[in-house]
Structures are given as structure tokens and as C-alpha cells.
Image (tube, rainbow, N blue to C red; front, side, top):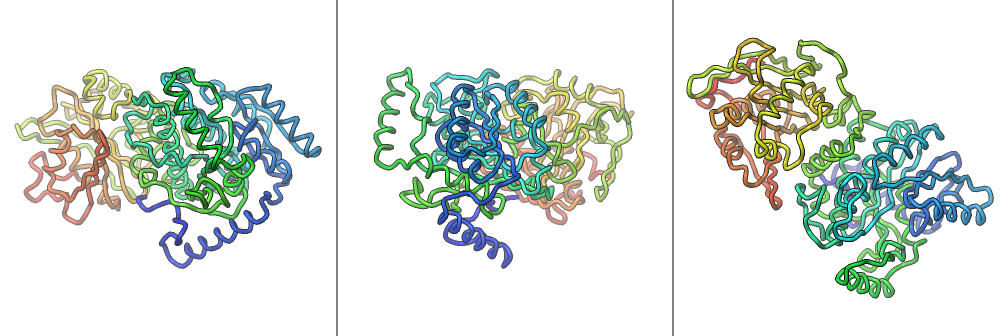
Length: 550
């Protein structure tokens, strides 16, 4: 999961002769597509394009319609959308155009639009997440999110998830996410994602474009794990003459910045039709999932589309998982259509009303049974695997924890919803352990919960201990058990997302005497524990009751 998901332009990504040949074929396909400047035959395909009433979105819609696709214009302004549809039909009388009103700053509007699209079409072959905004400082969406993050990332995350069934129904669907070269100047700070603190709106815009890439790459990894018949491809249009910079800002500082950008744009900006070429190549050319396309000339601001390498931050797999989990929670939209694969590790199908008190067994995973946990002070607690029936008791644990403890566990985000708790308590691949004071299996107050969610070769861990039981060895005992389970399940490493100032957890990991490395990004730390033979053994290393019988 940590290898790059795109290929640099100067050489194919490493991975053997087959992948190198695929990279060469992809570049050949791009060269052929750039030579024609037209989309290949798209008859029978259905393409949904957000922000398609103007700029590069309109040009992509125009060319796909000319190639025979049924094009669904998904736009916020009905009048401008109708004008765009009329213009395309006038130029191409046989064009099949649908119009769907959507406000990407409103989850209610997104759900309504997705419902209309799903009811009207049997499948979606191409989804181009193109619409974008640069608002004013302090602007928020109807759901209360900062405007750039809410519209540019969350809106498209929700729309893609709501159309996932229709995308899977297509023979070879393309999910095209439009980013920007501005992502290269974005600061990777997960705690600011829902509400960036910088008053500079262009910093917020850059952060949203980085989020677009993290989304596209992580979606690619889930698609690959699921073996789903679709591709997730990111692109950037270069510097194109569009309406993105056209609104009249209110603040003098914003007006000055806008004037400077427009002045530069008059010198190097390319026409919107040229800026749409990376979108069209991503939607129609024979390029693999997980790549990033953009112009190849003038510092990647214009010219033929080619595969390029995005920033190192955009390939941070841990940040991608964290953003994905946060987006599911904020939008209330999961990707359960990809269940049955590694994708289900993050967003599995809800267990529903199984109502069973027996731990759910998953093939090829070790069995786990209740056992004592002996603390250094001699007190004996009970550790047992959770089930979906424990959601009420775990909700009570969250209510009994301080804001600080919940803040550290969920990286500043809110406590999980009951839906998310049910997913965490009954993961398809992974383990959740609960700690209670009594040896009976159920009915006792829960004082700690530990989650291990499998992510392909790695696994992610999170711990929450009630405040009055902290610093007594519970976290150390739980972490040892999860590491042992992960190793016996064949995992390569365990990762933890921490706040940099969470020194108690860092000390807990240090006490395990395991090989670990810490990577800090601002206020966030990514801690990776390598799993090797004997690294979690109980020889002189487990005063809390030894390794669990798994």
C-alpha cells in the first residue's frame, strides 16, 4: 500500500516487465489520443460531468457528446446548464444530453441528483468530478464545511459513493478526479481538513486539490483490491482560461491576488478546449487506474496530456486512509458496494441486526477467546472480542471518556456514529477487543476498546481507554494482543495515526520493544510497527498477562 500509485513521466513505475509494458502502451495510447485531439467512439456510454456548463467541464461534455456518449450535465445553476445543453445540441444535433441540478455544497442536493441519475440510467461509464470553487475566506457549504474542502472534495466523494452501483454495472467505468498543480503547495495537515485555519483562500483551495488526489489514489487501491471493473484516474488541466477566477471577491487582499493571477493567466493560459484534454484522455484513453495526467509543457501548464508524478504528500497512504475514514463519517456515504475485498476493511457492509453474542469468524483469521488481563498492580480484568451487539456499551464508554481522550483517539474529529461503531465492532478482516472489570463475557461496563482494521498487508490500530483507567497498563496489554493477532494473520506491519503531542501512546509503543518508525507531519504523527518473528513474544516482555491464546 505504500508504493507509488502513479508513474513518473520519464520512466515506467517499477514492478516487472508486465507493468513496464503497460506503461509504454499507456504512453503510446496517450500520444495517439493527443494527435487526434478528439475522443474515440463513445456510442452507448453514459458520462456524468459536474460543472459542465462552462470551462473545461463544458468542453469535455461537448467532445464526449460529439463522440456519441449520452452526457449528463450535473451543474449548480439550472439556467447556465440549459444554455450549455442548447449550445451542444446546436453544434451536434444528434447529441444526447441530460440535465441534472446539483449543488455540491449540499449533501441533500447530492443525494437527490444521484437518485435522479440512478433512476434514469442503467449504468454510468464515465464520472468526471470536475466542478471546483475558490470562495471567500469564511465561506461555508450548506452543511457547514469550509467551501473549498466541502465542494471540491467532500461533494465529489459523496457523489461517487452514491453512484458506485451504477459505475460497477458498467463494463469498464472511469472515475476521473480533476485536481490541480496547486496541490503541490498544499500543507498536509489532517486536523485542518474539515475547516482549514489559514485565512488565505488559495491555501484552502490547494488543500482541497491535495485531498482530490488522496481520494483518487485511495479509491484506486480499493478498486484494485476488489478487482472491480473500473479505473480511478486523476488529472489536472494546466492553466486554462476558465471562470474559476472570474467572481469578484469582496476583500481587497483577495482582489489583489486575483488580479495578479489573471495577469499571469493572460500570458500563459491555454484555451479551455485544450485544458479539457487531460480530462478526455483520462475518460477515454487506454491508461491504467491510479495514474495522474496533466499537460507536458511550460511547467505543466499547457501542452499534450501525459502521465506525470504528483507530490509526495499525495502518495501518503496513511493520510489517504485517514481522509477516507473522515469523509465517510462527514458525508454519511460509504462504499459498501466494494465489500468483500480490502475495501470493506474501511467501509464494510453494516452487520445489521445479527443480534448474536458469538464472535463472527472470518476464514483464515485466528480465533480469539475471552481471557484475563493482569495489570502490573495485580488487578485482573477481562479482554474479549466484540460483536455488533456491543454497540450500546461502547457508546456508553465514549460518553464516559473526556473530550481530550476522544480528541486524541479520533484525531480531533467527532466521536463515531452508531453506524460506524457497528462497523468497527464487527470488522470483516480485523479484530476489536473490549476490556471489562468482570470475567463474565457481556453485561459489564466497558472500560477500554482497541480496534485493528486490516489494510491489505498492513493493519491499522486505534485505542480508547476510560480516563480513570489510564496509565495502568491496559493500553500496553491491548496493543500486544493486537500485534500478536496481526502477525498471526500474516500482516506485515501495524500503523497508528497519532497527534504529535500524544506522548503516552508513544511511550506505550516504546515499551513493546518492537521495531517502529515515526513520521511527523505538522501536528500529526504516523507510527509504523514492523511485525517480525518474535517481536511480540512474551519472553520477559509481557507483565500484563502474556500473549493471548489465539
